[in-house]
Image: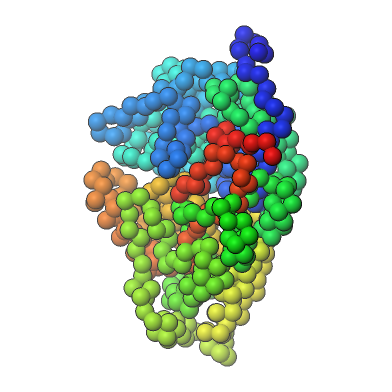
Length: 520
């Protein structure tokens, strides 16, 4: 038994207890308040721990907080932290660290894409807009082990939201010493089951079991190696060669072969995510032209894309909110039930009304981040646009970080790949992203009617009335067509038989600390 700074640490586990995970794109950062991509969030959930965690079915369970209380009006939450929680350098984890993390998320200087997710917290919107200082956010720490969160409006999904990395604590001394570099190797101090050992860009991120973690004694995996691979075909080859224990995805063009070849190693499950194309509404040709946007959507054959191209590894979708979202029925546009010929005829009418024809076709650029399935989908959609409307499409693929930057700046984008994975199981996790003031609204969609419906829903305590308002908002969104929904996600992992403890779930969140790697 190792003793450090008066703390009893469990003995190290066997060195061969290593978990090797495929992880898609290179993470853009390991700063919890600035991370955005799924690959970065996967790593952060191992490095850090929020007040809550996602349970096996997606519901919030206690994590750094052992319990919480809610006031009768649903606007005051009091979280009681575990007294044995510590940072990876042995420092005590306190409620002030969570206050700092939440304030940092909504501080405009941070540039968090998730700032608006915290809008139910009192004053969050004013802080994010720069009208109030971060100190005015409705969070405080009455004592080192108590965190109080005051909401402007009731939000029953708050505990689930607090499992998201944007709400994770910040180690104040590291941030003060290193500034934005506090999340780099050699600087990063974390409070989760693992600590950062190594980060070699485009090669690997290596995590080592954190001996100070409150539950280190039951953390079986000693080392986690995240391997970025944007090419899903190459990732499959690494899995076949025994270099990976779990893949981030599979090539959807080979889904049937993978099923036949790997059988029970393939985990295909409903996933709370939507895949769409976004239109840049801040400039022509899509600015102020809902008819043109709708025309491009009408001619897309989603059943062909999901069923034939993606081999039933995805679900055709006409909605932003995915099927299966808790206590919600996604709203489909009326034309979703039309025969194909009627859709195409209406699309051609709208295309002509927008001023385009065979002699004067729409010339548009479609951007996607580098990945084979994204390329194949873009190629097929460009062909559908060409065949049915005469649109000329230029395909542009970009590395993940460049793609995100160009989407956000909007200077060059016209149509771009979009997608969203729910941060919690609620329709607002998807609809809020298209609010005019939301940091993730790369489409520049601005509808006072849409914003007002979501604001009313946020203030509504009655679940049935809230659901009705959210559905009205989605119908408004589909009428305005700032996005072109294509399919709903399914999680798609290959998992080696020696990995124990894997549980498919709608949020597709898997904590390495809950897994085991058996001798093989």
